[in-house]
Length: 515
Image (cartoon, rainbow, N blue to C red; front, side):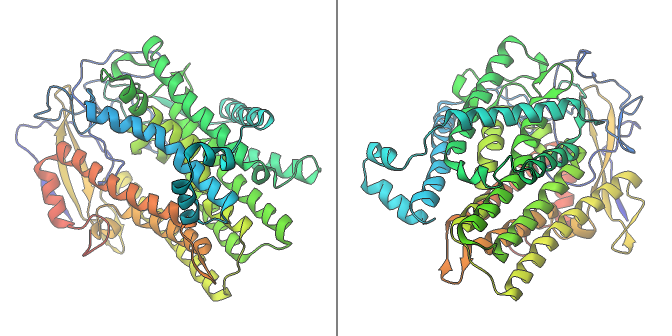
């Protein structure tokens, strides 16, 4: 069943965009006419003529014009603000300075305070910062730092030379539609096979990552600061697409939020896809396995709780790589400029904070009752199943333009049109049946189930509740709620009254009756 909402004065040109209202929907700013460039393709008046494809689905997306955009922000529903206020600058500076402190405090809590975050914070408050740092702060190691940069170089080689599927992202605000090398699953497989082979041959201690974790945290942060600095300088002296840049007048704000949307070296090396989807995520499961081996070396056993965490994390990571072309249509690739926010997050926050459960369990193992372990594994895998089912419904509706059945009934959707910067009118559908008829951001529900199941396996012991392993679930809850709000601001700007109709039909964002 389709509700047709077609504003008057629109043409007949049609374009199937993302068929559901989530972070994958993007509104883009009004721009100057796009120029053709060697690293991408410029927009044309015919939105569907001669466009490349991702599999069987055409990836043709053109920028739209958002009405009533303030002068200091070309389009508030796309990208970041063009001008940073003094308050934004101060906020960005504090985040840049404090984020590493959070990661280091977590590491110190594990290494020196038996995983007790309150005990670590108490010591921090009752000891001078200099003394606390001298006593507990992780120390850099030249060999470990060199090994980490060798790991990054290894991933660059895999990214560049492994067989890859060529996929295309959504069109940028300046009209560029960029090709991507998608070979993450192969890179993950080769990396793990190489590690397993080295362990089997006796060349590598399986717990080597865990045993050098403190020095690795330092190495992560070194690269986490250097990488956005490289992106900042590149944006000024050698931008990939100068018409997709944004400047604020504040170097702090630009360093944090990023200037370029899709910085690249050459045609294929994409800063975002590589750093967001290679070193950190490929290492995620290797880190988990290393801490699992470390638990065995320390305690002579492997607990069922760490096995539950390993399985849940592995499902999440492997699914990411199996569906890597889907990532090209997410908010990270399509919306966020490349600065400290993305660079430090993917290179430092992900490998340190997403693996806290196995870090804790390696040092403080506990076995769950078999029934409890089975329930948590079931919840985690059910979350994965929901996540995959939600995205399958979206893909099915997109492929069939809504002419499909969902949960045994004809798909219900709202048809809307919008106008692009070249004046052409396009059509899209907002799916409002199946999972998307329950809440407007159903894909986030599966993410949260995965997160809470893994954290519960580590953070709920026979002796009570442990705060530190729950940090990941707390972070994911805050992140996804914030994304719900941010996504909907852009959707409102893009679809206008049509979005209001959709919200009336699907009134809840994330949890029916609550939010």
